[in-house]
Image (cartoon, rainbow, N blue to C red; front, side, top):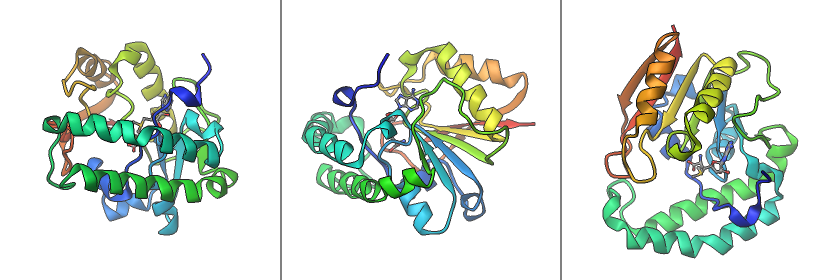
Length: 226
Ligand SMILES: C[S@@+](CC[C@H](N)C(=O)[O-])C[C@H]1O[C@@H](n2cnc3c(N)ncnc32)[C@H](O)[C@@H]1O
């Protein structure tokens, strides 16, 4: 099925949020990182500015910076309104208000838009949709991450997740996924099934992280080659 711009809701987080979500140390930030479902996050642009290496993968990268910028402008009020109406579902500690959230997200997405065309030409933003296999060689990266995509969209199903994570483990020795809750902030059966599946060949752990915005969403899944 075609991935249409009019059905996407671009929304992006910052490097500082990625560091906390994935407990990324300074040494790990210097590694080769591939980030799936990276969307309009400023992770790649901020890391690149800091001379670090990130490859971002997302189907929205088929569109132009202008198209994405327009789509962000179209959906932002709706996303902010939804958040305002559901404020009790979130922890207002690191980000203190809906107004601050709007500013943080818009700043992140503006940084992404500014960097996108240059980064796409440099191969840092790759148009690709999981669960399909990517064109990268085995172990081209040290770490493969997914923020607010895998597990959060539990409705994509077990097969989609197993194939996607298997591809991520082909590319990197370690996979980290945050959050491990679904869109209703619940731990799903999918999480248990994934742990059971990958436990037989990999070291799987759930770890507390120093980030919580979705209430109770302060854990990441780590899957590592033994
Ligand atoms: C909620 S956004 C998260 C963006 C970013 N990772 C962050 O945390 O700020 C989810 C992203 O997953 C992307 N996505 C949807 N389907 C995908 C697929 N099949 N493969 C890879 N990414 C996908 C969307 O385009 C979107 O950018």
